[in-house]
Length: 347
Image 1 (cartoon, rainbow, N blue to C red):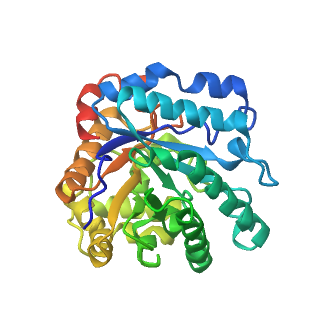
Image 2 (cartoon, rainbow, N blue to C red):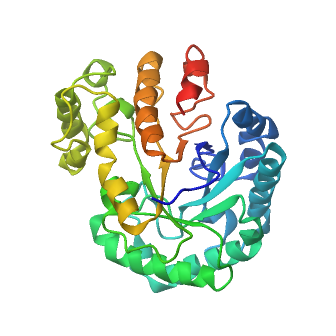
């Protein structure tokens, strides 16, 4: 498996230039949500990179015109990364016509005009940021959802990579698969186009623990007594709760090879298909998101990070935790004050 050099441990900067909330796509929010001190803190935590989710609407008009006022924040991020010796993943979190958390708003996969705008966006970003290729990596699109998007996504990704390569041969490009960058999604991706492609997956398993009480999950009970889960527990318990709250689409979280009780071996087993793909294509792997909701018990969250870390370290998989602060998963938020010094060792 190829190494993803420079990206061992990182954190997402979710909520800054992406998922800003209905009324926060504005200068006041961008100027205050992430400040220079936050980048210094990332460095103090011993991390080597940040993943920066950016929504297309922040940096590009719907007609494809680039927005300099939005790009200025990406420029500022790069400057702070340079100052504090951090590498950076530039992640397009939402595209025009595609919203990963709204499966009914996915016209991107059906309208060629939207795909043209997407390709032009990445051509412009490659021209602007390719010169930082030593520490900036480009992630094409966050969390493709439905299975029917697998084939069109392969075609769109191939077209976009080709367009970027006409501008920059060497900048690294990250590509993920369906079911929200699931490990299974990696198995449906086309082989990497060249040696500078990185395959990504996200890991919030088991969802019944990491997303306990999540208000955006339709089937999640409102009574905490019905969703509260400790960690570690039995795999059978997590499987039953995950099926109840999330449905059968998440059966892949629980392959038959799992141990009876949750521990580091659970994550080792879970990641096996990703490792097999990486070995097959000699492609680098990257876990672009993982984390625990702030409704969990902090000590249980610490135990989950410990077990997750043991598998990531065993297999040498680079990663970025979700998220720096806010976004229901904030590592810098008060809920983790009692365990943070221990927890950051397991990022």
